[in-house]
Length: 230
Image 1 (cartoon, rainbow, N blue to C red):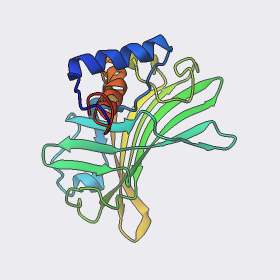
Image 2: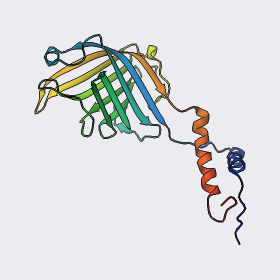
Image 3: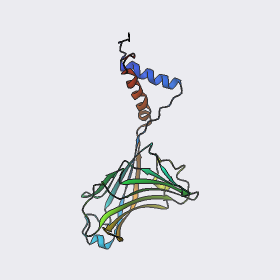
């Protein structure tokens, strides 16, 4: 007859972690990586300015991008380009002009073109389910490019998603471009340009990320019928 004796979680959890350590097992758990880029709008094409947008040169912008750490990338043959799907993004050009969306709208590129150039670019287009602000006259927001480029080719050590970034390393380019187009006339486009002057990466504390997997394992084991603690 199966035992019905229950061990408290404070006993089960450390025991499970101890077993993992004894066998040299380091649990790997996916976690969100959040990139935050801030900066200043440098210029707005005159046709867009004529649409009286709520933003202007000198205003601040804020871009946040979230990607799962174990997102599967797609390599573009022969280019060094890696595409990682995003979970979410949000770009604020003004308190009332915000673009936001999910993985159906956004991809990020980690680019390693060759030994002489590294680039990290967040790119959005085809806003199928995104939340979009009003059009500016005849123009509708169509694409976002946020680009960091290092001409020395010494910034990215691999094509994996970086979990730490220093803006000072990206000396070749630190730019934002938001492209607006006339629907049905893709040749008629105008842009907003900006300079990135702030950059941060947020990931869970290593200890917390490490503990998530064994905690889940311990809870699942303790709750199985017929096991100690069931």
